[in-house]
Length: 148
Figure (cartoon, rainbow, N blue to C red):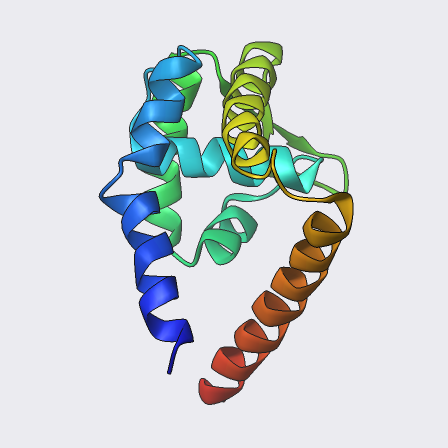
C-alpha cells in the first residue's frame, strides 16, 4: 500500500508538473504532446516503422498516428519512405531535424533526472535502476496478461 501514494506522486510530477511541455520548451520543440510521442517512439525504435507499429507501441489507433505524421511531415521532422520489403507500404522515419529535436528533448529530460540523483551513491543509482526496470517489466506483464 505504501507504493500507491508514491506512484501517484510521480504521476503528478510527470503530468501536473507539465514535464513534457517544459522539456519541449527547453529544447525548442513546438509540436503538441501526441506528436512528441510519435517522435519519441521513432527515436527509441532506432529504425523506420509502419504507422500500425507506431500506433501499437503508443497504444493508440492508426488514424491518430496519421494525423500526427501529417503535421510532423509539414514541419520536416518525419517523413514517409518506401518499405524495402513491400514497395506498396510506407515506413515513417525521422528526418535529421526530427532526430536532432528528439535528441535535445531526451537530453533535457535525462539531465533533469540525473540532477535529481546527484546526491545518490553509484550503488543507490544502480539499485534503483535495476529495481525500477524489474518493477516496470513485471507490472507491464501482469497488466498485459489481464487483456488475454
